[in-house]
Length: 289
Image (cartoon, rainbow, N blue to C red; front, side, top):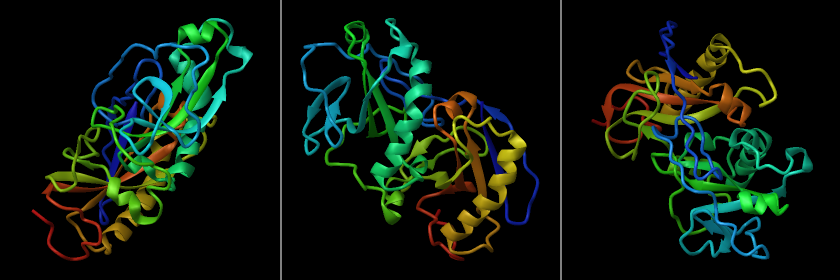
């Protein structure tokens, strides 16, 4: 399950409740991360097509479930970051989706951070993506997979976009793709809205908590790490540590997502009432209502 915490600068009390994590997938070929949306969507696997077709290579783009390359300057959904093949340990029968994700998706997430230019991309609308061979390809012995990056809709689906995503989050560009939430992250899974619209949560950064092969930390371990780290991030984000109307809150992955490489804890700036603009560098100014 996915959980959360919340802390004010002057308050140490925490109320943790269990919340359902959500992983959105497309046709057994793609998935986003926890808290990306509130529903799961499934389509058919990619068509096998011509066995001799050209599959997209790193730096090229694809559209939908078709793994053939399209020009990244044109509309596309996923930009390929790494390619590979599954080994013989999977056998002749196509493996379950969960098995594929546990084997490959942690690598896709690591590569996505390098490609996007920021380890904190879980705080943004951009995410890692995974495509792999459909049943016909698999039974032919063509065991390809493609890691990629995509801009995610509120339901965790890959949105059409134009232009390359390489390095797009470098430096402070992370805030150009920042996640804002219409509900308090300390209470439920973030409900994404544009940051210029009323919202009560702003994703401000992530805290690495281990490796997928490590045991999932306990709620107490997540809270103990998050409390000081998220408070520090919040003070830096606001430009002050003296406010009592903005709180640090955080969310962490469940066991399944942890094994799939979602090993970051995400920190948020949270308010009791909606604000209508970013709180970044607000200092001591009044909250934007």
